[in-house]
Length: 366
Image (cartoon, rainbow, N blue to C red):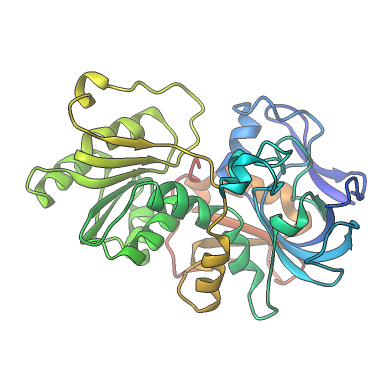
């Protein structure tokens, strides 16, 4: 088969790779229908995730068809169409029993494209298939469904739920990339009074307005805008969706006393925690890796037309255009890429722009 193989920082290629096979009775082999590229994949290529070894196939999000199952897989069979979760769950360890699948200690957690071969390939082996796959009806478009493998549950769980968004809140989302936009879309489910989107890019701010942000601001304007809109109190919830020190520190400055800061971004460098300013503010700071325990709920909402999933997709490619897709995604300042989806041949052109959502200047770091 062909796959996107990581060969060390700054080096990857779409090349021949061994076909995956069943290694454990709980495994399933999936023929990939659609995949997407995550900001975390760019972090890996930069060398920010050193546990990813050269020779690993990247990717942790996919939609596909089951072609083979191990003897202990009971819920799926060859021919089933499925969503592959970015998180694998053994179902037996303490954390899995609590629904904290991202912290699995039984061989799961974030392993696809991280500690084992991932989804950016023609075929992928999925461990713990009964808990790590989700059945997809034929009516669900792959371009919609693949965004529920990672970015929507990440935004919802690590941003909205960890931030404890409530009706009437003021929510400030710093970073209007794919995860930030998904946080805006899912925060609206809780009827906040207002959502404020913050980004460096005017086109990303336009995208945030399309997704439901009530106000937008550049980084320079944001703290004053939040103060003006809240009578100087600050935001009830700030969501960091970039993964750089400056955006985290901005969130700490904008959150009100007694408020919540939810950090979603993947940080590749240390961040200063200004306890000299925060110690007396009763601020709750939450971090976390997505568990994907919300995926069944989000999938039901997608089927009901309540999630604007594929509206975040700005480019689509055939699967064998993986190298080109990475180039487009990594140069978002020039290309306007938000989410890039690759799959089976479906278009006459190399990339297709969805004009309902404006472009962006850089990919979301999450």
